[in-house]
Image (cartoon, rainbow, N blue to C red; front, side):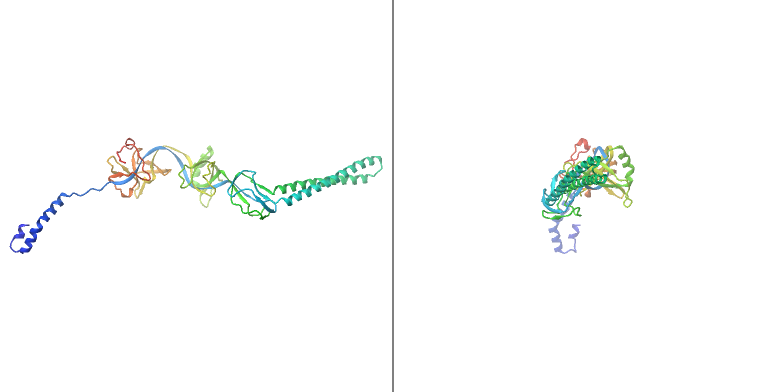
Length: 393
């Protein structure tokens, strides 16, 4: 090819340019022969070891926390609020004084009732004494039977009046006691709707304050009616354990027992309602709160567990990426069943100790070489003996 440029017919200028460029063309050809295509760099991923342990068999649902007792406090007499003896949101015990209604009108009514009783007691005593004297005079023939009967009737009438007066005194005392409104249960107060100086009416629609008992506490939830076949035998055996987890709370869930199973299925939703009772000693559960509920129906021994983040879905089914001993990826189909705390039970496809990819999956294909990154949301460090693979960290 070089010799052809120097044959007759080519311009001398072209031949001179070719001679000047020839060294550069030769260098470019040599360098292109020396360069080799670069391989794909390892893909950074996070991994986790497959575990084997006993896991609970559960039915999961969304529950609502309910107060164990909720009592709206109302007044039983008309009057003016004289004092409020608690702060909003304060814990109170049964019998603690909450409100005082102005007692002066009721004190006056009690004194009047006691005065009426004293008066009628004196009259009753006098009538009884007259009847006793006339009984002796009747035997002596001094008075007639009609006169004696009249005095005896008067004495008995005063006895009835005294009994009515005693009842009036008791009622006045009761009305006076209603001026001092006390807590009917131990619990936590809400906001009060009435301030000092406000006029209240007996059994008004609006409550003065509502007290909720939050220790223990209920969690109400529903499960599909198809679960009844499993739930009813467990309920007949005794205590059914239920767990409640507060969303975004890193602590372990609260554990309680099922205390209520409704007597009918809701035909509109096809579910049945249950309630769990929780001690709630540290008050993590709060009335009106939504929680994740797990009804524990049993346990599964020696279950193989993998993080839920490692299991992917495809048209052919579920699969995971397994890390091999040469740090290369193998795509393996799996069959899963129940969920346990963000982990899936693997019925088929994995063995305990194998390592699966949990993050960076979108960049992987079978045979891809990987590099375990130091930081990852679900990275779990496992020994080489447990993994059966030499994955670097």
